[in-house]
Amino acid sequence: MTGIDRLNDSHYVICDFNRVLLLNASGEVVECRTVDDMNDLHSVTSTSEGILVTNTGRDAVELLAEDLTPKYRWSGISETEWLRRVVGNYEVVGSYFDEASALIPFCRRRLPDRHHVNYAIKLPDGRYVASSLVHRAYIDLATWQPISQVLKQPPHDGCLFKGNLWITSVDGNIYSADTNTDGKLHFRHRLSLFNDDPHYGWCRGLYFSCGKLFIGITAIQEISSRTSWLRGAPSETKTGLYQLCSDSLEVEHFYDFSHPDGARIFSMTEALVC
Image 1: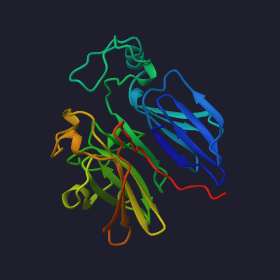
Image 2: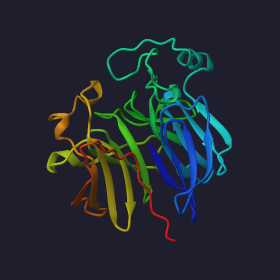
Image 3: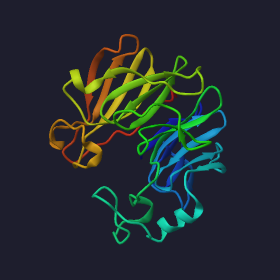
Image 4: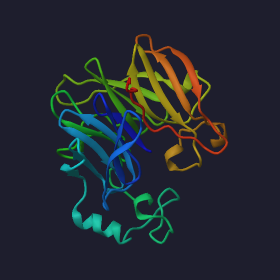
């Protein structure tokens, strides 16, 4: 599972590499959508208009109805470019992406991308925006152009809280931006999580609940161009949740979910009360 959100009072929506699923309160799958041109799905977000799915390997964001039928697609590349990726007509630079000849199911293959959207959300003014690892900024899906400043490291997940969009960047920095401005997202730095606290990893996932802010980190498996900020060895990184006071932003606790066989945190949501 790579993404989760609470859909309503009785269902969750989740995603993995190329599937979007509805689960009931007991965790049973009640609906599943699998599509050939979904690749490396990163997140799902429930909105008033439907479910936003970041189709990262396709450089697209999908809007699905609550029954998982398609409603709209924002595509950051042409259909021709996508078809070239499908047949393996692409070049790989570095070790992060998978060669076309790799014996990996296509839906799980890491493809060279143009935008690498991680997380999408509908703002209160009706705009749909997404975080872009490539641009190191938030982009407007109507134009695929940045609408925020370029951050030091790529932004990842986000969450609306009290009229602000709060976001993580992969290096443990937390920002917020007022959504009632001139159309731009002017992110203000709020916290450097890894500067003062001992546990660090790839930072993604944040959620406000009951006066707390929860932020997820995941142990890093290998050094790449995307981990230039890493201050130690991958073996020193952790998987877990930071709990902070949502008012003071003081760290109150770290829940360590690290495991010798590997553990990851991608996103979080509120539990259904049965």
